[in-house]
Amino acid sequence: MLCNIKKFNLKELSSQTFFLFVNTMERVSNRLEKMAVSATLAMTAKSRELQAQGIDVINLSIGEPDFNTPEYIKEAAKEAIDQNFSHYPPVPGYESLRKAVCTKLKRENNLDYEPAQIVVSTGAKHSIMNTMLSIVDPGEEVIIPAPYWVSYIEMVRFCEGVPVVVKCSIDSDFKMTAEQLEKAITPKTRAIIICSPSNPTGSLYSKAELKAIANVLAKYPEIIVISDEIYEHINFVGEHESIAQFDDIRRRCVIINGVSKGYAMTGWRIGFIAAPLWIAKAVTKLQGQFTSGACSIAQKAAEAALNAGNSECKKMTKIFKTRRDLVLGLLKEIPGLKLNTPQGAFYIFAEVSSFFGKEAEGMKINTSDDLAMYLLEKGHVATVGGISFGSPECLRLSYATSEDRLTEAAKRMKEALAKLK
Ligand code: PMP
Ligand code: GLU
Figure 1 (cartoon, helix red, strand yellow):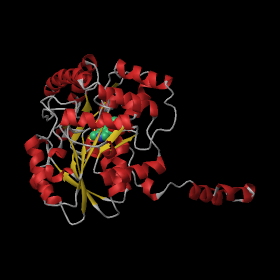
Figure 2 (spheres, helix red, strand yellow):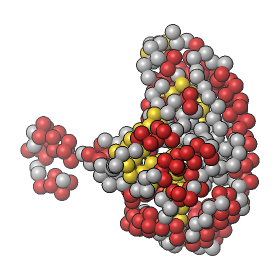
Figure 3 (cartoon, protein in one colour):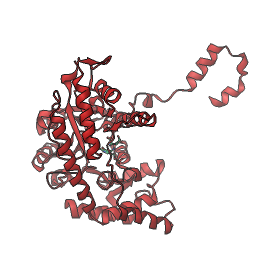
Figure 4 (cartoon, protein in one colour):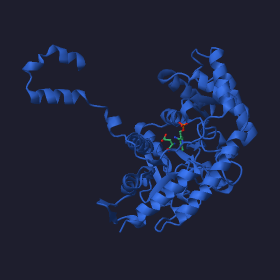
């Protein structure tokens, strides 16, 4: 199209023809047109915009630890630069990193994997998309319990798959039961995605709950289980439980994990899968055409992170737990919010439907997205409405920020919400 433009004398084109011409050229693919913008990233961008205008916005919209990456990890990265880890790394990741992942899976999860079953990618988000693209054909269904992390739905749709949403409520701590799962399975089901600890709810599936789900899945050998365990380390109640521990389904589980959340390494962009060999090979093939191996320096940093164990993660988790208790206590004092007690990650997913239909300062609240906008504009607190998480009646708050800021945020929310009549 751009080449064609040069063949025309633009002056001879009527303004209407020119408009139509440009309009046809500036057209993104239908596939992309249908994709929603990531609500978590959009809200974060909006609050950064207001901050840039000098407004003191408290950002509870972004899901990332506020801690800096631990020193020993940064040192490993500096060393990797000095040692010239500047060449293309192998497509599935350095063998040494994949071995470190296997050692971690044995040490922390008692799971046996070979390095050939591990593929390192540019963040866990990339790992999930790679997996979806490798296994989902058009028209195939992927079961997604709601509330879900915003990107799952869009990823399935991008693969021309069909998301099958199983709605779970605050009364069951937003968790899907084995019975709900069984009802959602059809002959077209290709995969299910489970996220524990969960974004956006902070819920954890217990071993017994996972076992019940695994028992259902054992009856359907064609279903792939994608287990997103990126928040594994941020667990306030005990040991992490992976659904891959159950023998009946292990050979079709894809564990998604990485260093972003537990090691405060969101910007380094390292995620990985631990998968059956055929999926690891498929993801490697895909990655070989689209992105190649993940950043070499970041891989060496991730290797150092994993090899040193999880004591740094535990320190950060302790702080997250203190903050959870603080913020939950403060939010409980706000009339109209329905809350449960999240057991992991760093999110609170509050039910806010009691505010629907109310208004203040010229803003009417019909949805949780309206409420998020109201809180941002009038209270200067950034949250994310529940619509993009598949739960329009809820609002997500991330408490990955300091106690002072959390206290101030709760105060602002209380004041702003009290004005809604
Ligand atoms: N899964 C979930 C549930 C997440 O919250 C995130 C964070 N964005 C990811 C995957 C992706 O993690 P990463 O930053 O490593 O891509
Ligand atoms: N996972 C984080 C969140 O949900 C980071 C943003 C994103 O990648 O969506 O806020």
